[in-house]
Length: 281
Length: 302
Ligand SMILES: Nc1ncnc2c1ncn2[C@@H]1O[C@H](COP(=O)(O)OP(=O)(O)OP(=O)(O)O)[C@@H](O)[C@H]1O
Ligand SMILES: [Mg+2]
Image 1 (cartoon, rainbow over the protein chains, first blue to last red):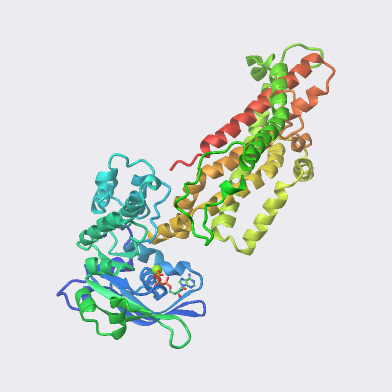
Image 2: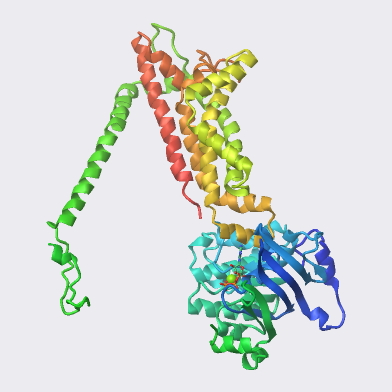
């Protein structure tokens, strides 16, 4: 699968884990967060968030509870924020990605990201999708891979006649699907999506949701969403986060996590029940 | 008059939907009248501002246009009392010296702009570089010449195209640097985030995303810098000096259009004065071309 990577990274080596599917190797990313800080502010406290392989994991919770913070810590995107500090371990293919020996740049090549606002580069549609292939020195047929990625992102038919026109001249929904195509072109193992539909209309949203069902055949997906119906529609597993304001600070944490139907029908925590019913203050 | 501008409200303050407001334009109303007055006033001021520009152009075309011919580009400047001639060597000299200035100012300016605009906008180095850029952009051009004279001409013991180019680069550098900084800083953060999210290193983010996205604006800055440098005479006065011959190398006194205009316009010979006009026209055309190029290249591609 990683035929596009020329140099073998320690992460690649770990992919040869074979054998019987135990509970252990059903987990793509195992995040054992002790605490995440922005400067002195503790944004997230003790939370264990396992992301299961080949599934869609949804993150829900009130605004400011740290969903984005947790998601962005899964591929070390938060390292770009100077005040960010992470305590804990995030295991990806048997390695702790916060180990000082790990190169965050390589981590991000294996764990791709789609952002809340569509953010295509100021390049042609084709160059946007080919971008990840170029930086990974992809050896195969670039044209073919670009087409595949655009098809996987359900955008091919809309753009096949204007591949060399600007990626910025597409509609919001098309731009977001372009960003998804760009993220999957280099064949990442995991795809992180932070509210990918919040800038989209209902029709485009449905398209992206349908697309996510397709994506999970090839990728492990973690998605933040504000929309509980969306979580129910797309997520296999749902993680509910909340904010603890008891000790005077606003600290986010994982309240509970489980199979989506179970979590929505029979939550174990009172807080989850309240949030799902919309009785949340 | 006043009544029609307010919404028809009842005594209680509710908007009364029964009264249909008159939405038509009322020409003689105070507001429309003032609007027209201001518009006309602005056009008038713009026209007055354009008079000097167009009169200069008119003069250049009438006085310099008559001599416009291939000879200007292929012949050397004539000595006193001689007829004909041209200033091919001065055109070459100007192009070469502006080229030298570009070789120095463009890479330095872009690197400086990337540093202050994208890599570390808040760092001490960036603050110093930005400050130097701003000071240099207000630097009197004659001082650029004096400075280069003191360092290069005295050091190398000769007037030269190299010294001329260096003096021009001092004027070009701040223009390129400050426009590059602005252009680079304008690249949206989310575009950079996308690149980091793809697994780009800092260098790749700058080379593959930030620079391509800001290239049109950077090119505009370069073209404006070239236009400025090509028209300057003061910095060349004691760096490149002048020469009546074709240039053979960078290390000898070299002719330039601006100095030729300066020299010939003060001469008592009608032929030289005509040539000075023609040279002015050619110089304006060169500057004009680069201004237009900056417009064309400055158009974002995507
Ligand atoms: N770059 C940052 N610097 C400092 N504090 C931050 C930063 N980003 C987020 N925070 C803080 O961390 C907490 C969690 O933020 P986060 O963005 O993860 O919340 P969220 O659950 O994604 O919220 P939303 O649903 O509104 O997107 C918030 O209190 C926020 O103010
Ligand atoms: Mg968020």
